[in-house]
Image (cartoon, helix red, strand yellow):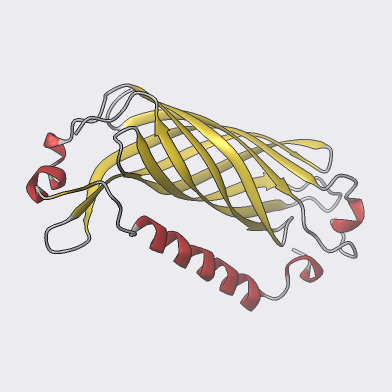
Length: 214
């Protein structure tokens, strides 16, 4: 990984710690979807979320990695929950490339746009966070694993990704907030080859097309 592209390791580690700290703060923020019945939300047997529903989530967040320095990504995700614990999802994302034009990679860039189109399998666990003595924020914690198509510098590439996230239920019952951290892996489209590892933190509102029922 060229030093001109990314800076020294200390700078990269500091960036990752900063973004991960933001992510952890987001998934622990209190919301309006609290309930007084603490045993009910802590016991997953009492969770009454729809077994099948569509979930639409626009998102935005920082995007960093080997081929970009510090940029952002915007997009949206459509997920289908076909059980309380599993879902499939597709998403589209766009990011403007930021790079060192003097680097080996930067010298090859002729298009400063990056596109993602991905599919994923999601594993979901109903959970709750106690935010005060009598108040609990209900949420779903999830992991996802998938892959898809990446277009970078006019080149079509296959990519894989993995991530973790939290879907926090608010009021009204069809509305929630999502915070998610992802890592993308793909082969660089330049002569020297090698794998690129990028990271993104995605946040945004979520619309439960078939509302959750607690």
